[in-house]
Length: 297
Image (cartoon, rainbow, N blue to C red; front, side, top):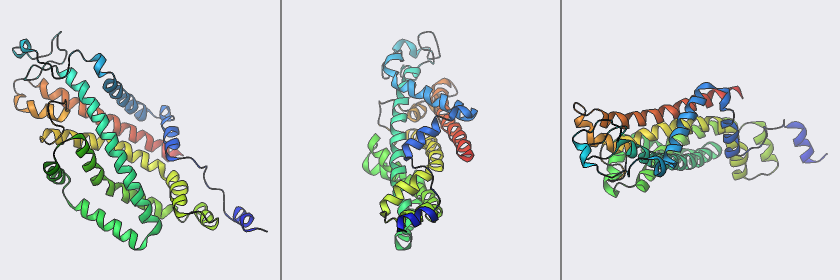
């Protein structure tokens, strides 16, 4: 009897091998089974379409000034959501601002997920001094107040889409690494992982082909939740004046420019706030629905 035959008889079959991307798509296809997920997906799809079609559906260029609207900036036939204090159409700026949020947030979260998953897999699989080093570095990063850390880094290197993506990636990766580390510590003792070791598979193969695909459920849920958190962070950075540089439309920057006028022209701040809130709610509902779907698997 060969060693391979012995392994096949002793070790139970492991779950079907599917890549993380294929597993995520298959899980998203089951959204129709859950109402919160359907509502959340509908909201997210609405904003994605709004961002893609902004050049076609926005009634005005985002930075065009209508001096006639300064006398009456409230919603009207010419400006459905009104204009801001500079006569710029709020609806157009919200649509173009969606392009910024839905470009920066997913890239930043994907970067954090990739880096955090790599560090978490290494810490949970190798353990020992590698685990200790990664965990201590993560603790140092997480010990700083996040907003203060953002302000220090962006004030030093300047506000730009690339810098915002980098700083969010570096500050969110330790959190994801902790999640992946805990999952890896549990899965590394499963029979199909032990069987892969006996077959002589490399550590990289075991981490990325055996452990990571079977950890996709919690990671997909965390990814959706983190998209909502990142949307809030981008809005907060814009409100603090360290977001994307003007005159690019930025939901947080729109609120910053007009929040002092809320007693007179409340619509200037309320509509951008509503846009941020709706997108965050959409991501959160999608995450809740996907969590329920993953728990049934």
